[in-house]
Length: 268
Image (cartoon, rainbow, N blue to C red; front, side, top):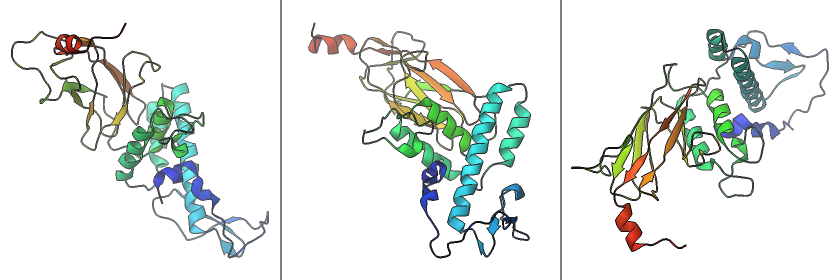
């Protein structure tokens, strides 16, 4: 069953019809001698008198409890930035037993649904974690914090460049970002594995309305951009699983703009 569905709690809809049991207030007790590997004893299954809770419902409850704990830890971290080590220790203790490879699967589903709204074909309600009807950066940050990280916490760095096949060569003007003759060059970079990269043309979240990508297990990422001017403002914001973020301006000089504009004059 898909991890996204588990995170959103949709599997909780399953009901055990085989052995319906009335819940008795005095009948709930902690299971003795049945420790589930990889899960803290504080989250071990509870047994109702006469029948254990079904595996599916137990698994759902455990995933939801862990997600709730992690969202609470995120709020605590924001309110108490002076105690990151304590928060990180709590996060490690609450981590669910989920293979790290699933993290990239979910994050890739997120970038496919990024910026979508209710009613659009790529909108995925399971990824709308703040339930505001659209999938945006806040959902990505919540998702990053809830999923197992792909690496330990390290300083967040970002390297960006124009892909070699699109980079202008020879005697070309200098530019702080990249220089190309192509209208739709590929921008590639390297950062922390599993980090989300939001793109756009401004330094605020509202201006970062371009596509998002996720860094793979080696920290590499790439995306195509479409240029529309001689100098094109292109900005990237990287966010990792530990709440670290960095913003990078990467202006792109399009050397072919003059000839393209001459052949395709803009309507006024």
